Length: 68
Image 1 (cartoon, rainbow, N blue to C red):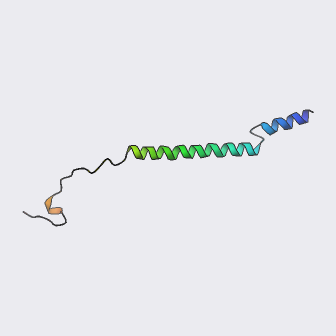
Image 2 (tube, helix red, strand yellow):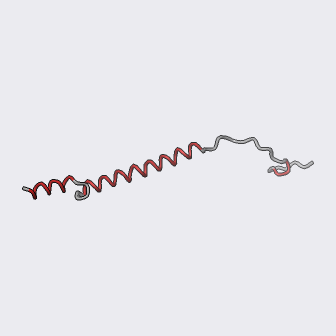
Image 3 (spheres, helix red, strand yellow):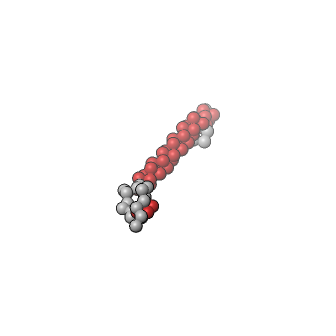
């Protein structure tokens, strides 16, 4: 009787049940990787290129230069 209780305990315990522990480790690693990917995407979105700046270009450095 005590042997059956011990087997039942080992069946439910995280350390002894390889299927439950593997599933748990898989889900934890999956959600951690997903969180890092979504966090990286959000950071890239926050630091995105806002638009084309208005930059003065010298007329002598254009494709068709204009000299004085």
